[in-house]
Length: 99
Image (cartoon, rainbow, N blue to C red; front, top):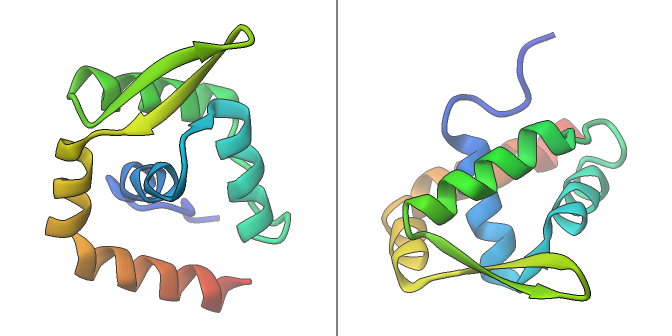
């Protein structure tokens, strides 16, 4: 089975989810599973390292609430989303078509 997200596209979709609202990692996993109607749910081992990389690149930041890291997009993250808006639109179409 081919990967659900091609290289760099999960990163883009994580930024999109965090642009909608600040979220903790488990919520991101749950939302991805919902949007794929249960057909895809990334593991914690997939999502958390990518969130950490986005944070290291200054695209997201986190606060700790109730023992959980809550991630929020930064202005730099929003700028990347804007720069890749066409790619994001294509990705969202592919997701809709796949479920």
